Amino acid sequence: MNPTQIGVLIINFGEPDEPTPEKVTPFLERIFLQNSGLEPGQEAISRAKKLAEDRAPGLIEEYESIGGSPLNEQAQYQSDLLEAELRFRGLDTTTYEAYQFTEPSIVSAVQKAKADGIGHLIALPVYPICGRSTTVAALEAVRSALNEENWEPRYSAISGWHHHPGYRSFRAE
Image (cartoon, rainbow, N blue to C red; front, side, top):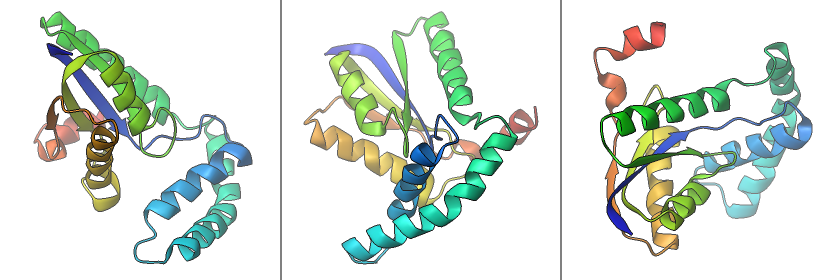
């Protein structure tokens, strides 16, 4: 592990890479299951599956109407720009896209950062708002992945950035 090498997890929701039932339905199941709350295990799984099957046709239609979700492409673009800017500023940085509900998952991004010898891991959820099912869940997933990997790099989490006064003007552009 190189203590000066920085890894930034650009964490986003993730979207299916194709607007097909085979991609969209499991994606929705993962979302509904994460948000199932206090339901018992099998009940939550059954409910998530039913909700996903009911919602998938409408979401597929919406994706098809816009040529597929632009989210993953936008996340890749953000990741590339951030890495280039940090390297331009002289920081030995690698960025990793990490998605809550599609691949590359948060777990796989953490595994890649570990394999790359990252010494300082920074989690940056890029959700426009902070909520239990977005930023909070994403940062919990990073902590869980670090524990699963038995890996203890220097770790920082960035949240609350959406409160910055310049954020609205940035999003408007």
